[in-house]
Each structure stands twice: as C-alpha cells, then as structure tokens.
Length: 217
Image (cartoon, rainbow, N blue to C red):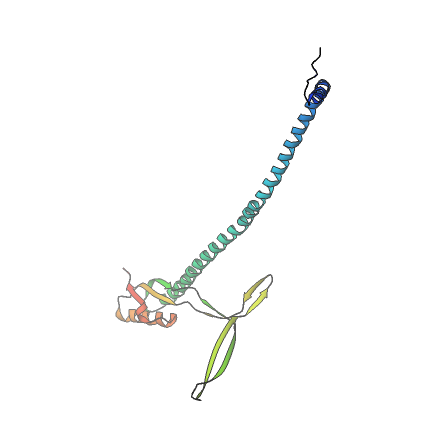
C-alpha cells in the first residue's frame, strides 16, 4: 500500500528530482558562466576606480617635474650670475688701478685688491601718481578745520620685449666700494704713499680711510 502522506511540497520534490538528472549538466555550465560574469564585472569596476584614483597623482607628478627644475635652475642662475658680476667688477677695478699706479713715478710691481659692496644698481622708470584729499571738519562749538591728506603711488613702467615683459632702465648707479688695498714697491716712501692714496681716492671716489697702502718686500 502506497503512502499518500507525502506532504504539501511533494510535487515540488518530484519536479526537481525529474529535472535534476536532465538539467544537472546544463546547470553546472550556467552556474560557472554566472560566476565568470560576476568576476569580470568586479575586475572592470576595480580597474575604473584605480584609474580614477591614479590620475591626480600622475598629474601632480608631471606638474612637479615641470615646475621644480625650473625653480631650482632659476635660483641657481641668479645666484651664480650675481657672484660672477661682483667678481668681474672687482677684477675690472683692480686691472685699471694697477695699470695706472704702475705709470706713477717711484711706484713699481703693484698689486691691487678691491672689495665692492654689490653690483651696479639699475634706475627704473616709474609712473608717479599723487593724490590729495581735503576734508573739512566741524566740532560741536562751531569751529572748523581743514585736513589735507596726500598720498603718492609709484609703479614701474613695463614694456613688452618679444614674449616677455621688462622694465625700462633709465640709468645705472655704480657699486659702492668697501675698501682698497695697494701693495707696491716704493710705497715705503711717505710722498709716494701719499700720492698713491690720492690717486685711489680720486679715481674710485672713496674716502681715504678705506684705502690701505703697503710697501712690497
């Protein structure tokens, strides 16, 4: 006698058991295909996120490589050019002064050392705008007073030279000289020494206390 008490879900078990043998193989392939699709989707999403995050870092690295060498090179060139300019000024003064002193009577075998304060100074063209404002004030007692306020604003005149903008230079101021040392044969003579000091102070426009003259051995 067959057992009719199979439960309310017995029909579903029958369907599954019947289709399990026929569709078991196809179900495996479908399951594997589904897993592969999900994995591929995760890989695509991950690549997109990583590429988005890496873009600012790459841009920052490129910008840094473009800016940093330019800044370092600029500061380095400015520093070196200033040092060379000061040295060239000192060398120029020393050569001219040595040549002139060796032409003097009683002076021979001259060595000159010139120490300058800085390079020459450029005088730039400027536009000057002066503004005057007058204010009248009254106090409680009926008194009046006038207050005048004057302000001056200066701006350097800039012109375009090709692809860059440069200021207009209207003049140059020679560098200040800190001191001059002259070592020469014949400087042990007081009259020759006095003549050397006078020649240096007049030619370089420096006070006598900044000039030292020593006899050469």
